[in-house]
Amino acid sequence: MRVFRMTVAATCVALAPVIARAEAPATTVQYQVMVSTGLAARKPFEAWFVFDRSSDPRVSGYAVPAGATVRFTFPHAFTPEPHGVLDGALISWAQGAVPAKFSLAVDPNDPRTVVLRFVEPVVPAGPDHPGLKAIHLRATEINPAKPGAYPIAVRFVDAGPLSGTTTAVAHIAAKPVPNVAAYNQLHQNKDEDWQHVKPGEEAPLPIDFLITLPNAARSSLSLRAKDDHDLAILSDGKPIGSITTKGVPVTLAPKPFGPGFARLGIIELRAKAGPTPGTAEIVAALDGGTRYVIHLVVEGR
Image (tube, rainbow, N blue to C red; front, side):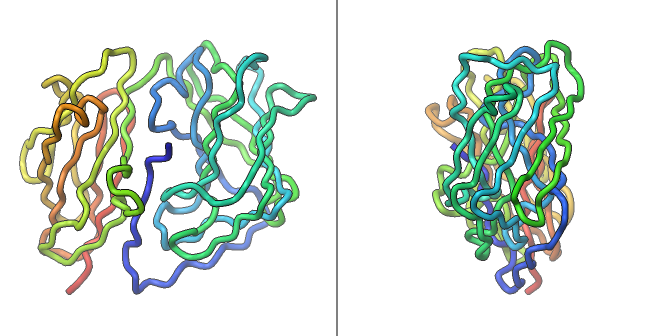
């Protein structure tokens, strides 16, 4: 289940054109939001390969022709799992899945290489379908025993101007870490991450985060106001992180959930714009874990 989804920040802004290039896109490796183990030592690899396109839906992603492949080659520190099931992959932009068919397989000549083939083309088509921006991969590889930075070769083949090889670095941690990201499933087909408001207005949608904690029984998650700009994230009443703001002023207010949602790891808040136009960042961060940024665009009157 993909939990990132965003809203157009300003409908009066034209879409950025697809940028021509003659090399593979720069790529980073980021945590898959619903697991804490994907980049932990000795655990099965599961992560997002995120390309160098803004998550803002006004910004186009990449076009990919049918028949193109992306080859992910892991270094020898990773251990292939011969009986593992290669069943986890998703081609996406930040708002959801890209509606194009693809196949996934391990290279029969190299068990450390996973091959994703585009059966159908990816064609950017406006803010509802801006093209490829990321690939989620659950590979049949066991992460290295030692924490550290490990380069993964990402090679685009028969991909037109994207053809070429880049390196994505997987930062393997000694153990699973607390993980937080936006959660949009409570507002299907609506986007919480890039909302736009007028000064003094409340954001039309509440903002939800999903928190996944490692090596612990399911706890009850909640929020507590610290002041108008900061919230404390609590697990069974104990602080485990915070939600803060940067940029133009916004006011945050926690929205209580019943025990069902709270024990699923979901927290929710409302955001209200201050008097100043500009962009505010709402930053959720977990102690010893990941962070996630929501953008709230405050437009001039």
